[in-house]
Amino acid sequence: KGGDYVIVYNKLWAMLALRGMNKGDLKQAIQCGSDTITAMSKNQYVNMKTIDKICDYLDCQPGDILEHIKT
Image 1 (cartoon, one colour):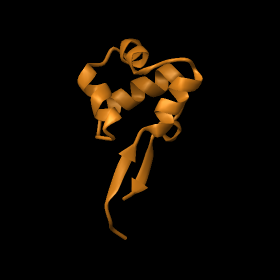
Image 2: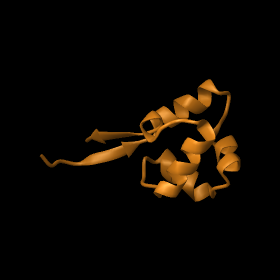
Image 3: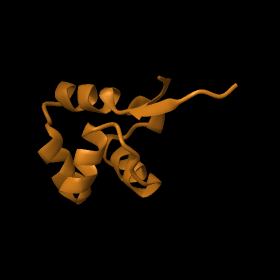
């Protein structure tokens, strides 16, 4: 085992697009800061509370919005 992995939010952006939403809409819906959206845009870590809010709002599971990918 081992190796480097990264969290990727491409599934989230695709889901938003399918629902006619953008990152600003998500920011407003879950009441998070711009820094959180920027972090996800750069495939950086965000806290689990944010993931929970997104999943509640979009009625989905974490695996529906993010992936853990080996680099």
